[in-house]
Length: 219
Image 1 (cartoon, helix red, strand yellow):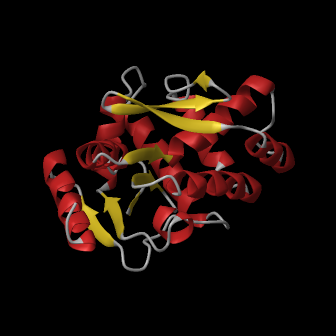
Image 2 (cartoon, rainbow, N blue to C red):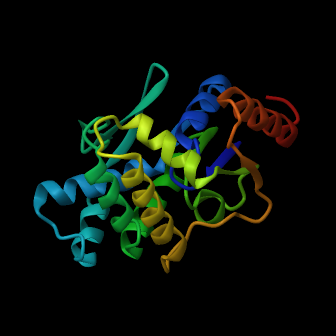
């Protein structure tokens, strides 16, 4: 079984997907982390985010895999653990730009589909139900109000100047994700939309677990 969870920044994808995977004993894959990894490597190597050819070569020549570790998965890139290094505001914005490059998306989608061939998994991102696994048994689109998403991101990244700045970054990210030419963020046909505004994390998790039971008959 593949459970595909899509949605915009701050909708709760990572938190929910991790816990759903843990409870089901499934593999958890955070595809956003993979784009962050490409942005991190580009930053380290001085590759301009405007050089689509160089970015594609960088993504194609990089090996990535997720290593289960307690209640989360760590991302190894060319055997280096970059889990913490990719969680900065600068890398987040870089990932948003990198994700618009068709060659990068093609390379990473191929990796993601390969990960799915290993067994049951929960994969979250922005094009899982539309591009990576359009035939997934369970497809979910998480959403929340812009205000709620900004509040969550602000709480997750202490030290940022203001919540207004976080809200502006989210608006910029939404615009890039929705307007990019290749694999734009959109609700996949047949996906179940869950508005997480005002919902406890446990409620969202239980909803998805119920969908998984219904989709497979029994987990």
